Every structure is written in C-alpha cells, then in structure tokens.
Image (cartoon, rainbow, N blue to C red; front, side, top):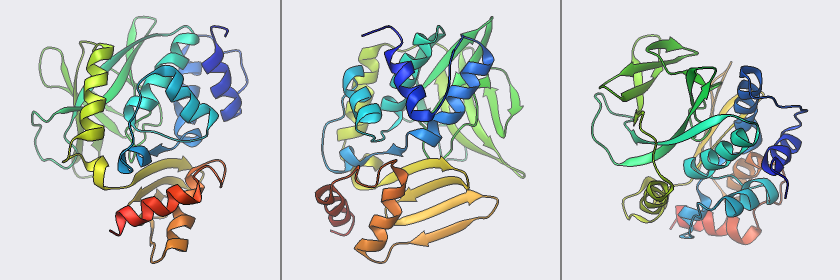
Length: 266
C-alpha cells in the first residue's frame, strides 16, 4: 500500500486528475467534489448495525462498496485523504445546535476538521449532511460563502448558516483537537443511543448539478435554482428516491431497501 492510496482512490472515483500539491486549489477542489461523489447516509445505524471508525472499514464502505456514511466516516476519511496530499489536519468534535434559537450545551455528536495552510486555519467539513459547505471556511469571524463564524469564547466558535433575514445556528466547536478515542465514544453514542435521531429516521444528502438533495425518511427536498419536494407514497416510489444517491443503482440490496422501508413504516 503506497502512502497516497486513499487520495488516489478518491480522485479516481471523483474523476479528478493530479498532481495534488498541498495548496488552496487542491484543498478547495477536494472539498468541493466530495459531497458530489460520496453521499451522506445513516442506513447502517437505522438498521441497527455497528459503525466502525477504523480507516480500513470506512474506506471499504465509502470507496470500494460505493456506500455513504455520516459525519465521523466522512471526515475521518477526508482527513486521511488530505494528510496523504501533505496537509496539516486536526479533528474536532462539535455540539450540534441546528434548530435552536440560542447556543446550548448539547452533546458532542458531530466531527469536523481544521486544516492549517501557510499559517491560515480553515474549517473543513464534508459530513454535515443536509447543509454542504461549498468550500473550506477561513477560521475568522464574519460571513463567507453563505456561512458565518463567530467566537463564543476564548477557543470556541459558532458556525451558522447565514440567511437573508437571520442566521440559522449549525454547531459549536472548540479549537482544541479531539483524540481518536473521543471520536469512538461520540460515534458509539450517536449510533446506539435510543434517542439518537439517526436510530429512527433515514437521513440522506448529496450534491448534484441541480443542487442540494436531502431525503428525510420518505420526503425528498431539492434546494437549488428551483425548490422542489417529493413524497414517496409507495415502496417503488421510495426506492426511486433512495437509489440515485448512489453511483450504482444496485449499491443497496433489495433486502436492505425493503428493510429500510419496513422500518420507516413499522
């Protein structure tokens, strides 16, 4: 195994041509194409299957088998890809405050990355699902690319979606990096806790030419130049909403597809 195996495999999957020097152009290109290439999905959690944080298992699932994953899987693999390109990357846990009007001490159930490039730090996150960052964000206060960053403490930041009228809070995170064992614990909590949103709902997301595609259970919302929605009323309609998230139509077995549908309609 060479030391750029995961970078090479992802680049092939995403139809990107090298070389990949550790500069802004490479960082932006890899970040941009990621959600177009690998979907966000929580199918294993929904079907009560374990989620591994081991790199070999994540690479097999996302790169070899053509599946997707949620934040820990996406950003752990993305971290490896960036490091193989020569970037300095640290992992960080975040408290999701999506849907709240004020920041609150919620559990640390999300993971993001901070990339340091030529003395400048960037927030990189390819695993937030329904809200895809178009590119890394400079770790500085203010609005950029439709998002806003604000300090909420000495080493704590708040990321928000910047709207025309008001911001929508996303998550709080610390500048202090986390350890791999912290990620293991957070992943276990998110994938097994009885009250975890991922245990009882199908959540899928991805970017396509038309815009952001978000599937919540049997409801598809498309956010782009035109806003569209579709509700699956039958198994065949549900299958037609799920399958396009994957590069191959047969990525999910018929047995798994039926199990998901049964779980949502049980």
